[in-house]
Image (tube, rainbow, N blue to C red; front, side, top):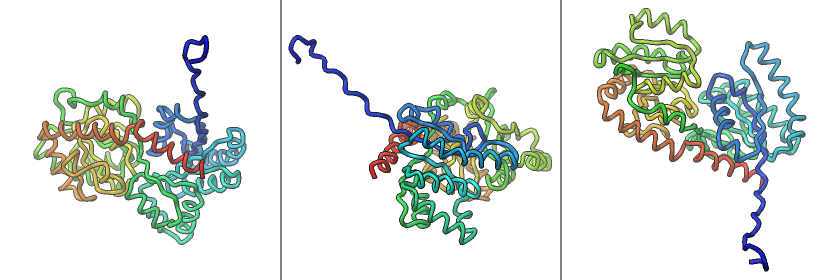
Length: 371
């Protein structure tokens, strides 16, 4: 106690927050990376660091996207000098997204800025293996970065095989649980048994396998309804629905986001995603946070999210009969749905909530700042 004082010690000043310049697609765009970026920007993570977001591409036609992407890259050096980040965080996928971020990486290194690269694409192995040039550039990209983020231990092993000198950390995708938890509960108005699938419609997401599974599900659960919400091959899917006579069983509301997505999650009894390729699907994390059981395929990081028979089921990609059997079993067993859904909520809270993920990401930043 200081003489004549109250005994209170002045509080130590808070350490300055890490300055992070994050680069990725416009968060208002459709798709997984934009969704992840929007989650980071609207979360406690954005309060724990001093965050500036630099949109590398925007929604629109090819010409507009190319023009705006080139302009964003040209503006990046000035933006970096003005903000003076401790870390540059680059979100990348495959094809043009990868080569755009390679250019950003080279600029950041020329500016002597520590750089973290964060992969999201489920098709990245196909892209990397498509040409010797792609393989060389992937190795350069991963090894020149100060740190690489993989979405799961499976993806960590894949990237390590491409670039043995890369410094790879596992940080899963986060999900903002509170608003999704509000979507948990008994599904459907009027006792509907709704099966939901979110994402771009088409072959890659297993949409046509799901259409083949629907008549098999209806044999056991004739009240089932299927909501396929997304963009992509909507008209082709609509044509196939008509050809199969499934108009009364299938809804195609288009891309849903925000409150509309929350309503669909609240309404559904089961979430399905029968994809052929995935990184770590945000839609599965959202369904888990909403307390829904999941039927999916064992691709990408999905097996680390869905444990067979514990919080959902895994079926081989392309196996419509197996998909139908698992979906029907869940629709016909409400106690099983509730048990698996509760396990999903607990798993998200423990490992995939923003509070769980933000600390891991900031630890990666600290490691490159100290290096």
